[in-house]
Amino acid sequence: MTKKYEIIFKYIQDLSVEVPNIETFIFSRENITNYVLGINITTKTLKNQMIEIITKLTYRDTKENKKKSHFEVSFATVIKLINENIDKIELEKILLCDVQKIIYPEIEKILINLINDSGFPKLKLEKKIDFDELF
Image 1 (cartoon, helix red, strand yellow):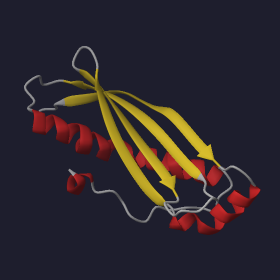
Image 2: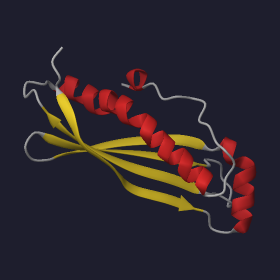
Image 3: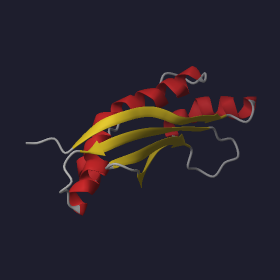
Image 4: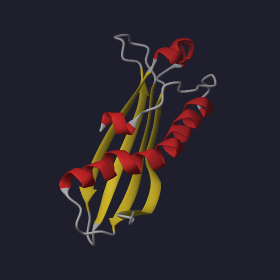
C-alpha cells in the first residue's frame, strides 16, 4: 500500500480554560465527571497539495446551570498529499479518520493534562472515539 499523505506539522493552536470564580471551581470539581467531550474537525486547503486540519476538543457541562467551567484545545495538523489521484471520499477518510487516529491520543493527553493542571481531580476519558465508526 502506497502512502497517500505525510504529516508535515503538528502544533497546539489554542488552549482555553474558563473558570469564572471560586464557586464555579468548587461546583465544577464536584461535577467534572458529568461533563461531555465534544470534537469538531475543520479543514483548509493550502498551497502545494497541503491541507490544514484543525481538531478542536471541548470538555464542558451541557446542563443549564450558571456554574460552568469550560476546557478547550485546538490542535492543528498540516498534511501534504503525496498521491494526487485521491478521490473525494478517500480524501475525507484521510482527513476525518486516518489522521485523527494518529493525532487523537496526543490531543486527548493535552486536554487531560490541561484539566488536571487547572486544579481539577485526575480525569480519565473512559469512552474512546471510534473515528472509523464516525466516518
